[in-house]
Amino acid sequence: MQSVEKARLAARDEHATSVLANNRAAGRRVAVAESCTGGMVSAALTDIAGSSDVFSAGFITYSGHAKQTQLDVSSEIIETFGEVSLATAWAMAAGALANSDADVAVAITGIAGPGGGSEKKPVGQVVFARALRGQDPDDYFTQRVQFESTDRAAIRQAATLFALDLLQPEKDELRPSEDISLPAP
Image (cartoon, rainbow, N blue to C red):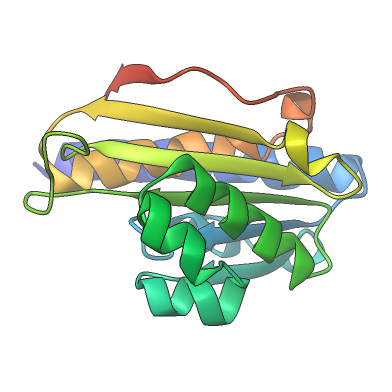
């Protein structure tokens, strides 16, 4: 079991180091709005010494109320689409940009389990959004991912790595996407 934890930590650190180096080289700052990952993406970035020149802000907005007060997600979006939705993730990413000096922001909201899932929103469903400052909001990247696991730690780890990858400058051309399924090792 400990080797799984070490492997997860090594993967997380490798992704975070790359995100920081590539955004530093591009002269950019990043922000993260997290729900189901509970700060894991922010922790991954800030665990790397010297991250303060790239990491602008991390918002941990686990509840709907926190999403509304910290990220300006409207109650209408949450009431209409739910907390785990493309619209909510989109609004979270927009709010992270609006409430920071970041050039790029990623938002994560989902159902890490083991409970809380439903037929329409099963355990392992995580929704991501990516917003770039100056980008047309209609072009913000959004994607619903079904991580094929019911293990909370595996889902949160997979979501963290996916979110870190979205912060890479090479992802600037991404646009709204189709739903996908991925393993959560």
